[in-house]
Image 1 (cartoon, helix red, strand yellow):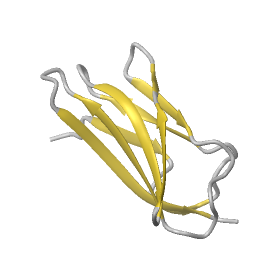
Image 2 (cartoon, helix red, strand yellow; image 1 turned 135 degrees about the vertical axis):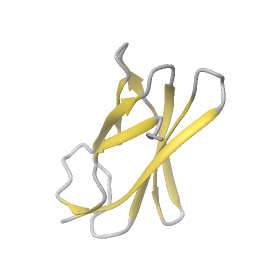
Image 3 (cartoon, helix red, strand yellow; image 1 turned 60 degrees about the horizontal axis):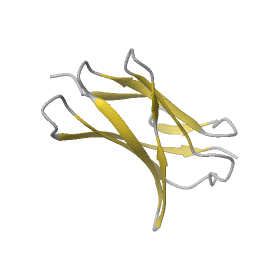
Image 4 (tube, rainbow, N blue to C red; image 1 turned 120 degrees about the vertical axis):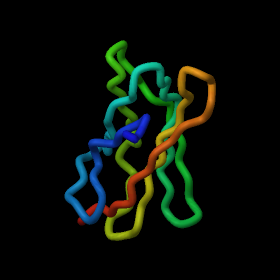
Amino acid sequence: MADPITIDTPQGGPQNCATPLIASGSAADGVSVSTATLKNGTQTTTVNVAQDPFGNWTANFGNNVPCGVPLTITVNGTNSDGQPVSNHVDFSCNC
C-alpha cells in the first residue's frame, strides 16, 4: 500500500540542504496535510503546511536548520475518514 503522504524533499541521508529548508511532497486523494515537524534531538519546530488543490504540499522551516546532526521531518494530516496519517524522513544537512 502506498504512503498517504509522500516526502520528496528532503530525501533520507546526508545532503546539501537549501536555505531556507523547504520540505515538499504530495498527498493521496482525500488526504489533508496540516503540519510538519522538524526534530533535532530534543528541539522540535512545527510549521503549518501549504497544500494546493492537487495534493502537493510544502513546509518552510526557515534558515536555522543545524548542520551535521541527525534530523527528522514528520508530516501529519488526516485521511478522508478523519483518521490521522503521517510519514517521516531521517536526514542530515552537510555544512
